[in-house]
Amino acid sequence: MKCLILAAGYATRLYPLTENFPKPLLKVQGKTILDWLIEDMDKAQVIDEYVVISNHKFAEHFLQWAAEKPQKITVVDDGTSTNETRLGAVKDIQFAIDALYLDDDMLVIAGDNLLDFSLTKFIDYAQEKKTSCIMRYYEPSLQRLQKSGVVTVDENGKILKMAEKPAEPESHWCSPAFYYYTREDAKLVAEGIAQGCGTDAPGSYITWLCGQTTVHAMEMPGRRYDIGNLESYEQVQKEYKGIC
Image (tube, helix red, strand yellow):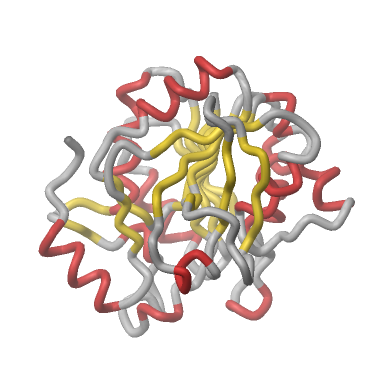
């Protein structure tokens, strides 16, 4: 299994911290965000390569970080240098697939979120379902739902419908950027792009994929910390206690 880490954003809302430094390498409780994620996922013992998808501006930072790690970590530079020219998450995923000739099951995750529970639970869930999978959590705020991926599911967790940033959300189930693609479904990313699925938000591919095949959604067993601005970064520094 490969783990693709989406890290090609520019984090403009975190300036000046991230004006010349990538958000995924910011430290929380003395450890980078990526270290928290990778050290946890390593416990599953099923990931044989981590692929960090970076923009050109920050690629060297990731290369220096990866050189000091015991895991096999490959850094892919998507060639963009500004927020205005970014490829978007879905095109970055396809860029990495093409650049490294990837042909495997894939865990695809945002490189700028922290969790207080182990992602190994999500990996176990996906392997049990034997389908592509996402995670979901209950979001009471209409405003936040309108800025996120929203899913409706049946009693077995099968996704009935998914919408990115819906004006009128049909449920309170919100989907963070943590996905599992089966090997077969990873091969369909290029087709999804060709058929017009959105490419900026990473959930846009799953939205398209749900119309092609079965996808399940696991209810998150804990909390996600989304570091979107300076205030939320300061808050997570105070609140985050690690993975339970």
